[in-house]
Length: 236
Ligand code: CA
Image 1 (cartoon, rainbow, N blue to C red):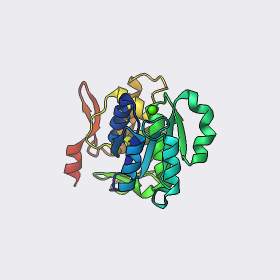
Image 2 (image 1 turned 90 degrees about the horizontal axis):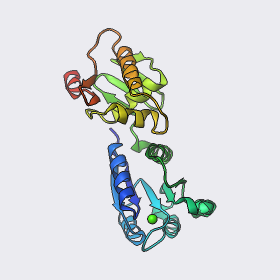
Image 3 (image 1 turned 120 degrees about the vertical axis):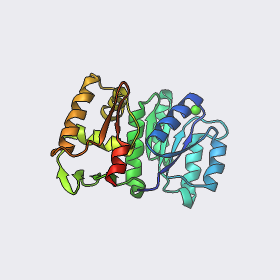
Image 4 (image 1 turned 180 degrees about the vertical axis):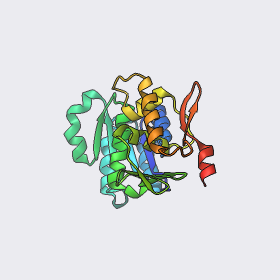
């Protein structure tokens, strides 16, 4: 398993900080949060994370100025930075990117979108921090090759089943409601009936267990679905 990527969130809106911390943590990142620009500057001199989510307007030191300072120091010259700004500041976009941010998101943004940007940026900047091969019991998913094997036999999955399995493999043992799966796998902005989840889980099960192998997906009545941790132990 790869080491979890470390993400520093610099944001002074408490509600947003909580939301970001919760969601980044759920994705398996190690998250640290700081509310002031000058405190972030100090923290980044002590320890360099794998990525920074940086708000534009901050007490102490603005996100723009912090970004400029980070780019001027050799240790943080190439540090991936995603800048957050309010809609009114959007015209400043060019300035933000010129200052050295790698990406730019306008508030209010959707959490899946931010997570996708974080993942994309890490994949480019620190690919070793994202596990290329996710494994669970006798199942392996190779993200680079987009290939799934079970007991070394290739398994052909459709795009939705692939994303579902990838998501489960990122969070082994955790139970997800149909709504959480819709949000994370399909995206919050698309309206899809929750029963669609059951249909795709059914397909994924069938494809993963062509000869009646043990089912790695557990149905938790009234709660949702999870990769079955007992299955993992049984297969070891
Ligand atoms: Ca702010």
